[in-house]
Length: 113
Length: 115
Image (cartoon, rainbow over all chains, first blue to last red; front, top):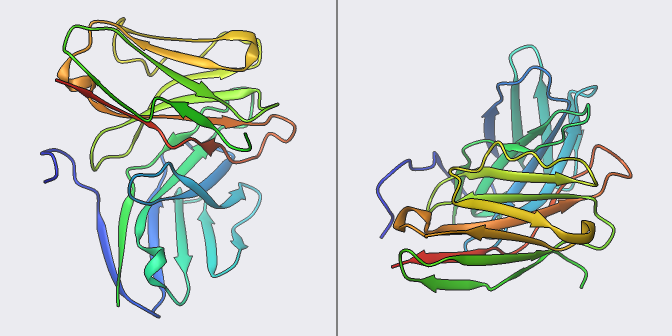
């Protein structure tokens, strides 16, 4: 079973519906943001990114929204599929010499068939 | 190879032993990161290498942890006198600096179990 400790927030969505995963970041100097998807037993995989000079970016079935005023990032997944079930992490980076990537807590998305 | 390679994929060690974890980044990537992920939790930053600059070691949890990167390529994370709380998946990632705003690519991780 799972270890005792911090458990990831979870989101369950019916297959075919849209999902929205949210992330709050803390550093107002962050300049670049990335969403990663992590399936069980694998390393995180890149989904989509956005620079701080943008507030929206679209990919295939995914959209990232950035609200710098409230330091909020969201990932929208359209027409969800069973393969979308995974843990989703947001990451932020400061683009002036120190590009350390800082990750959020993560959200576990489960697609219900 | 085309991606980030980590070895071993699994490591079981006895408490008190030293372990070395290896990361082969993507060729040409100048930035290399180590993260730790405990079961069901997020990614905890450990250390970051960028080219010839001094590494950012601010995430290393104790002086039992160290890392080096030889020749700007392969990196080794060493944990001395392992403790049970060191059990986790250790993830390595690399990133290019040709364009500063780029994603990091992750390896599959090394699952470390201290018994």
